[in-house]
Length: 320
Image 1: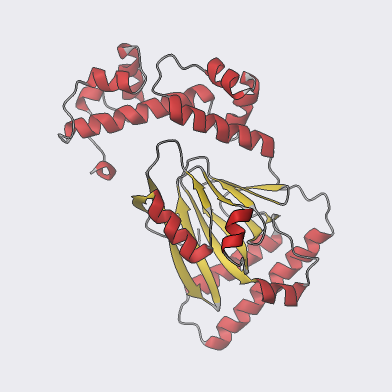
Image 2: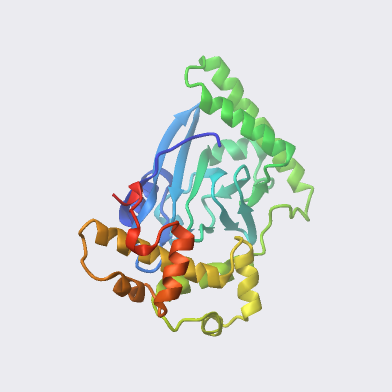
């Protein structure tokens, strides 16, 4: 992790405005009913580069042809995943980014950034299009090229970025040398990948990732229905249970556990609001509201998950 940023709670609309001001025009797809989010966008300038710190817990950020018409798209974005997991898709290529992975995105082409509703944080280095083409030509560069964290080029790029970010008092000459070093390493990575037509080390199974995003969106919208079950979800989405299970396996959870986690989190927040005086209904009512139909099961799973029975639950500091 090269940087640390303090994420805040903010309206989705405010995040959209800040993202447009710093990175350009994008369309946001939050989870159903999501009006507030954890995250933010911060602009930084260091070592002769403009960069953005982007943190979000929404489902997707899209850049369509309409968005591209709204701004010039004068940059390539070299994106370093710093926290969480993301799927970046451009030019029929998908890269699943884990912390330390990088991908080059062309702002003049449509792209999809999928975060699955989990908290994700990236450092986006803005590389001027004119300079990139002057250095490397037009044919070498394409959006969607991935540089995995275990690749020597990736390690070297991360090291140079770390040096640029760690010392803001470097003399101008030293900053200039670091800037040249970063472009040199990026050029080496581009030339290497241009000779690897079968480069697949970080390419994602895009179909499975899209299945996951669809299933998560569906569960997020319907988890409060006590009759909801995995078979119904699969049927409504036009996929098999096995297909849905494989998609959730990529994030280390089953569809059933994901559904349960949404219900438990809803109940936890409801009980925290009850404890703070914001609501006065019974805990059983909150459990039913969250989608539980069996109070004994709710009591057992709540205690196992949060370490306290619902009646004795004390809200964490982040609920204040």
